Image (cartoon, rainbow, N blue to C red):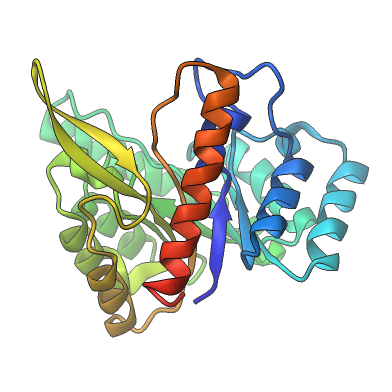
Length: 274
């Protein structure tokens, strides 16, 4: 296992749906930040600008990664086959052998409709397996809060391909009332990369609210998660992510993110020994 940094650790410094900072971090600057933190790799996700860069710029980004001896993984936002094929090719140009993809199911429908949606995800993924194989890029499906662990298991085992596995996220499935340990037990044997992300559940006027936390300050027992992964016989890269709230302004938010990243890296290294 190697320790990496997901670009969603800097979600407020880069961009998220509905929010773009005045001076967003671009791909190159994010990589340089990760190098400065001393991690062993980066997970470049779909909110970064590399997706729309010309081939020459992608070559320069790859050179930066290779010159510093770090690994790179990439992230796509959905499982549309045309989009995934584009992202697989971009991943190949960057030197990434793992592309995280997000399979989403609309849970507001009947069980029959949900089953149909799961089959459509399988169909879309099946359409890109040839290009994934040719490019040497494995697709890692992330449990993203819109698909249960058992549905994810059905998709991956149904495809029965060495080019499709799981990106295990330690927080996302809690919104589906799944404990992180349960999700890890079910998906651990199929995991090819991971997002380590912590959270707390706090009182709220309307009941309770889930908020992000620095690694080691929330409810996730990462020691148990690591034990499950090792027992499952897998050796994924561990990429740190954060789900922390914004602060009162952009400057304070960026400083807060940077502090939480440093603290989480310290925990991963000194406590988890990654």
